[in-house]
Amino acid sequence: MPTLIEPGRTSRNIDPCVLVIFGATGDLTARKLAPAIYNLGKDGSLPPNFALLGFARREKSHEQFRQEMHAAVQQFSRTKPIDEPFWNHFQNQIFYHQSEFDDDAGYEKLAQQLRELDNQFATRGNRIFYLSVQPKFFPIIVSKLKQHGLLSDPKSPSWSRVIIEKPFGRDAASAATLQAQLSKDLDESQTYRIDHYLGKETVQNVLVFRFANSIFESLWNYKHIDHVQITMAEDIGIGSRGNFFEEEGILRDIVQNHIMQLLTLVAMEPPVNLSADAIRDEKVKVLQSVRPLSNYVRGQYGAGFVNGTAVPGYRQEPNVSPTSPIETYFAARLFVDNWRWAGVPFYLRCGKRLPKRATEIAITFKDAPGVLFQQRDKHNPPNVLVLRIQPNEGIALRINCKTPGPSSPIQPVKMDFRYGSYFGQSPPEAYERLIWDCMLGDNTLFARNDEVAQSWQIFTPVLEKWAAEVPKAFPNYEAGTWGPEEAEKLITQDGRAWRLL
Ligand SMILES: NC(=O)c1ccc[n+]([C@@H]2O[C@H](COP(=O)([O-])OP(=O)(O)OC[C@H]3O[C@@H](n4cnc5c(N)ncnc54)[C@H](OP(=O)(O)O)[C@@H]3O)[C@@H](O)[C@H]2O)c1
Image (cartoon, rainbow, N blue to C red; front, side, top):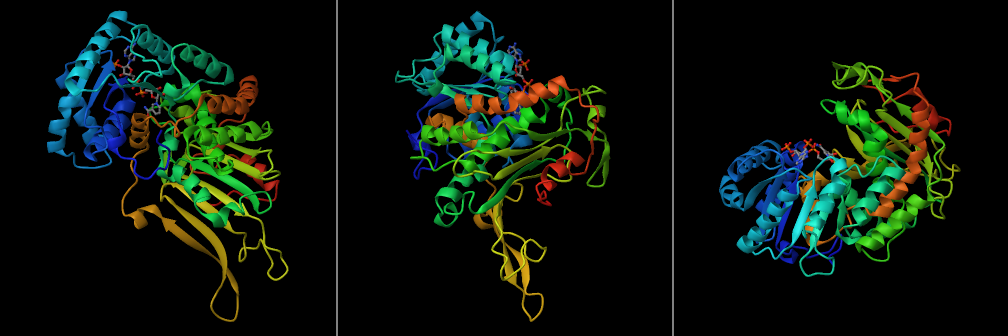
């Protein structure tokens, strides 16, 4: 079994396969999946024996579907312009299948079409089914695939893997129900739950940074770390996603999955090896150690100015109720009650329509003994290590230095590593890595069932409390500001401050 960071992983290790995308005419396929598959192919990372089959409801020919995929790649690929000679060859491996998700006759035809593709491309019955569909369709698709003999036994030489898009459930109970439905037909080893944050290079680098550098690990605990801040800020609003966001809110959309993934990677113990289960075992232990939340804040943006442009409030966005109680901001103080992190607060914050787009993990170390130099003033602040996830991907360490000359002896300076300037190229898109890993049979970067369940355990009481108390003060922060006043208090009451980004 290949592992997360294994030298020598190449497309030569990948079995031939057919990738079937359910929801192949949707937004996610156009914006993310089609460009990811194109770039994998162009980089030589797809197996030589490969076919792509789009599954959706509308009638169209293979040729029409190929043209739509071409247009999507042209618009959304990270590499431009499109490599036409490659595309002209590659498009012959792309096909379309029209059916409703619950139509037995459609699955019979799908089975027939897959047999033909196996013959044509020597794909040996290996299949990835990517469910890029609304979550209500996950159980029916999986059960129909099983019923029509399209999900192989996990032990059989031909493999079947199912990628499941987020969200996986809306709370602890609905996630458990969904899991119970899926596990009737699908083994955990065949289940690949997407959290696209895990496909980001900078997120994977948190593990490398921690466990491939000996200097930090000895400091990575309550003795040396004062607190940790995880920020996921967006300057954009809801845009055209009003319908979706009204059902979700930021806690479900971002905190329960992406932020908690970052938290587990920062807080986990070293795994016994780099296998998927060893890593995920340690992540689950972190989630099990999280103390029930008692200190948290929700917010919703009103009208304001972002980067000098006037923008509407959340309740004025399209498809949003004018009295919506949905949160667009969340902040919390969280404790991981284990030996390593006893008493160390983790401050989380994320929001829409904040002044800028930035995702980072900041680790603030404890003050040096204030015997020689007075600590915590602006000239001599504590050391901070910042892992920048996006944009300007990199790592920075703030240290205090003597300034040249006889006066003002100390000044904070920054040691800064930037991926872009060092490696000279932008990292691949998360979806490229995740599709590639699924082809390799490596589910390290996908959320395991117990991870998802445990994370819902942490946030379900919050969601229940909110559902019982309509927020009276919404909107409670202006677009273009760093969130509601209460979020300031949440951290200043501890004698600390949010980082200025
Ligand atoms: N879009 C994003 O940025 C994004 C980001 C993260 C996660 N996701 C997740 O990804 C999934 C897909 O999102 P999306 O935005 O791509 O959805 P979408 O644009 O609404 O696309 C839905 C797709 O499903 C097909 N479909 C719907 N009902 C069907 C039925 N009864 N039978 C057969 N096909 C049917 C549609 O086919 P027709 O076009 O032929 O009707 C279309 O291809 C969702 O789980 C979403 O939460 C999306």
